[in-house]
Length: 421
Image (cartoon, rainbow, N blue to C red; front, top):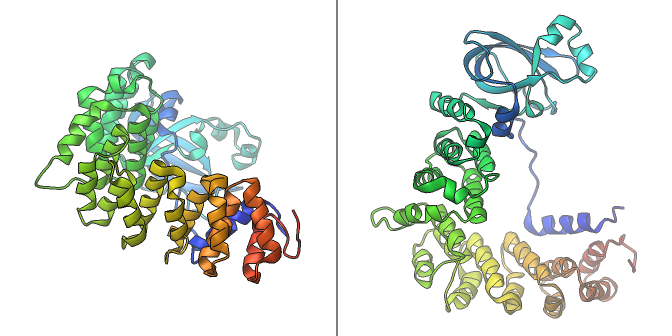
């Protein structure tokens, strides 16, 4: 019997929030992992065409690649390169296929002894390169514009890459490069000190354009919003407000999320504007960053009545930020929500409030509504408090519902049948 409390709590939350499990689909490796870092430090990088591939022993593969455009290093156009890599997941297809066009970052082949059996010919082994970042430093089908920007950026001296010139090129890449690379470039920008000053108006416009890219993904948007908040990129305030002020076309909700990260929340006017838009995503952003004296009242109403579970969750999270323990009653009501995701979110928020939430949670476990009581038991465990543990022990021993007694024991890390820690 597993007795680790973290595992027990994870199981309980999954039971609350998930109707089932789905096996991940088998896809090829995406690439783009620390691609910019790899290019800045590896001896070679190039846009290549994969001419041939073959399987090697022990889950490895080799390919012959023809250089189409060098990015780092002195490999001439038309040079044939021997490249090898390891597929760490046997369920995935090889990351490179014949005929593909790829930007790949290369380094010396690993000196691990296993490559002696994979490539027994010493001459072949000595002329074979590996793919940087354990095989993940690559990008499929890069545009000519991407390759050109990378070449110019990497031609800069290290000090210039870290300065305004380098930041300018990186901002252009975030706006125009393929999404996996754009996400990686955001991570590279995150390492730059005094980023706002180096960005300037031009770079700010580029990052604003990147935020609303037609092909932008949630991952790219999230990484940009986090960057804006961490570095407080006030240079982006003007272009973001210009988008928000467009009377003819409402900008994507992420524009408002970015502004909220800069401003620490919304004014009452912006809160009212977004909550009145009608669309779920706008209401969600409005709830998550609501501001003004009326915000707590509006958030309580949204948490109880909004038709969208996502909006209800955002309202609960913001209410806790604004009112702390004053949100306990609303969170307790949410433990009886019809949506498992809302119940789970309310349990997490109540748990974060610690011992102050315990009396209300105990009351809910005694109220007779099974789903709300289950969520309350999880919340009691998440408080991490002595009061919460004592309440769980009481429930485990004396509650009239056998299933709730069992869940309380699991939350305490006990085997079913135990009556003590």
